Length: 222
Length: 262
Image (cartoon, rainbow over all chains, first blue to last red; front, side):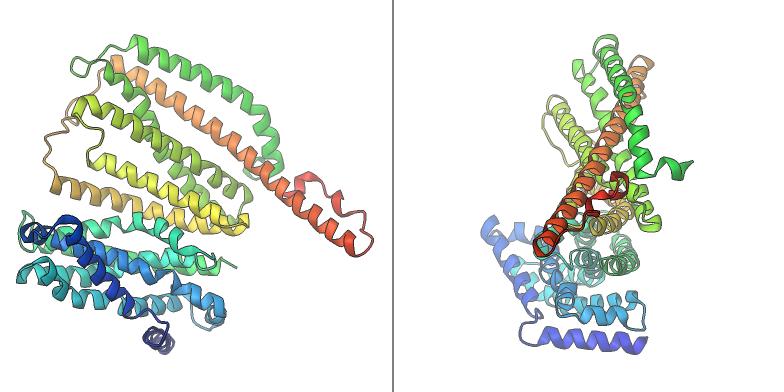
């Protein structure tokens, strides 16, 4: 079972790295939104550094949505999803492997690159580290919640828009705790650990519920 | 008895007999409740006449949540027993619940303008209701994207249950967010209890509105069942025409009774 998961993760990582994969695309999109916000708000560095964590988190939510509609749809179209459904492992394992691979190509690069992009919105060292840590802990929740929507819309032809409408309301708790943890890293009344713990809890809940629900959606879609 | 009552054919029979009574009863209840809340209940010493908005607002908020709960129960019915009436109930509940949530939001902001001086504040309760409305919109949008009602029912059931797990989390996190962002200066509700001169009209309105909601739900369920029968018959007709184009059509295709068409 572990071998299957590892093989699936490796396959999806290779697919994301090859031509047509969306490996680096979400990172570029992330950078683009971060760069877009100062044009809308004006180049005031004080304002930008105050709302910097919020900008980074909002960009993370949006760029998680980017590749999600292809998460199961590509495999549904070329038939490999049928093979995975028929494989002698639970469908939950398949979902877990695919979501892990998706997070490794979107969430993890975002978290690792966020200190660099924090420079653009004038974050200081503590805020940068805090935001990167919250993104590292919180983006799995975004990906797992998104996976439910991706599984539900896997066989719909134009699923991208409906996917966003379905999953964005469910991502709100993660956004709230992500931003408040990132902001309490530098200032604020609550200690940094409290919202971070809640964020980690949300990721774990999303991992359980998201995996089960996405597998159920794929299983019942025939 | 439940299996018998929930058979779609039986359901059409008993609900058809019951509906005029329910509709009359809920109209009478609404009339009584509106009379009580407009003419009998006193104006609030602080809020004046605007307090009467509450008599619409609170029942609408309750029904918005109530229909989500009934959708979650129907979703379990769909996924566990694959009961056709459960899908129908779930599909029928979504627009009604969304409408009541919208009424709650609109009346709330109409009340907020004279009281708080603004149509919208990012208060925890308002925000939770708005997110509930967004989830309703997502569910209705998902229904519209899938042509096959059985597949759509299962997909929507999964989404409804995921939403039901998420709603308490959303409620909790929005509360956290609201206390973090906003001092409790605007809302001073909580502390006061409602006087009985307002409580009884409010309870009457809640009961009448719930009855109205259930009546509307039964009507919508009947419409949905009829719509599915029409869909099945249309497909059969198309198949019959298709078969007739190739060879002589067998005569017995259209002879299945309507009750089995669902």
